[in-house]
Amino acid sequence: MRGTGPGVGRGRLRGGGFSLLEIATALPILAFVSLAVVSAIVFASRASRIVANQIAAKNIAQSFFERMAIDEFTSVTLANYPSITLNSSPPLYLDFVRGSKCAVDIVITGYGYADSGTATTLVDNDAAWQPNEWVGNTVFLVHGQGRGQRRRIISNTAHTLVLDSDLSPPPASNTYYLINGGKTVRITTRWRYLGKDYRARIESLVIDWGPRR
Image (cartoon, helix red, strand yellow):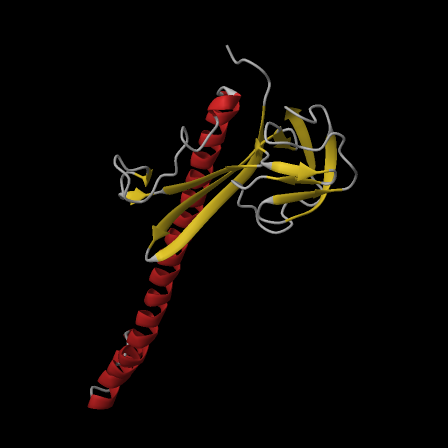
């Protein structure tokens, strides 16, 4: 004959379900696992958005350069391609749905008219180069005094190129020059996401291929 005492009932409870102690122990573990899963999903979503923003920003920069590449060479200037700030109107959207704006900083450098020069230097007082940024590149004298000559650059200051061999005749105030035979374009896109600043940059050379039309 089977027993019917209190001990038998408790045994069945343990065999067929969870005790309060087991439930109390499991709940914090379940909460911790759930929090870890949610955190992983949020992190993956943010990482995916950052990558998507970076791709979009590079595409925006590339689109600016492609417009310059097919434009008339003389029209590729900062006057025609001004930089765009985050407060520009109309704004440039990186992500229209989320209202994420993008700034575009444009630098067009490596060309212009010399102010003076010597046999081994070219001076452009309108330039604002970084020290030695052009080392190893080649400057071409395209128009004016010294036209047709080219020399390798061995150093530079903010306004002066130092060349590896003599120019004859040297540059004068009517000498138009191009470093590497074109205009160096640097396009930097900037944006903010979740309070953090991001940027993407491309640099390339716009060449004078003659009239586009």
